Image (cartoon, rainbow, N blue to C red; front, top):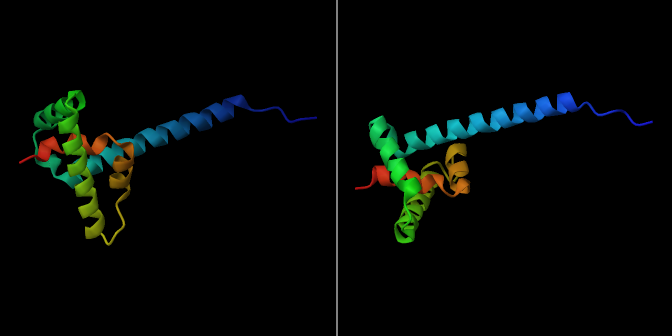
Length: 107
């Protein structure tokens, strides 16, 4: 006879895992803000830059941001001996996080 599944404990375990993933994402985004130097901006400026990036529809501009973000991650990887920090790697894998920070540090 099969042992009955404990759905309550499985649901709790999944909920805990989801919380851990969400917390890790927040931490990594914070580390990305610090790594890019965007933490020196006023909160309102950072929020405005992120909103502009999130709402940008010009694919040429978005591609420029993506390239700048990729170059940033490559520099970070070389500066650390080839190993990228966890936050930077996750942001690069996310695909949309890196370009959003680029306009904030634009010249």
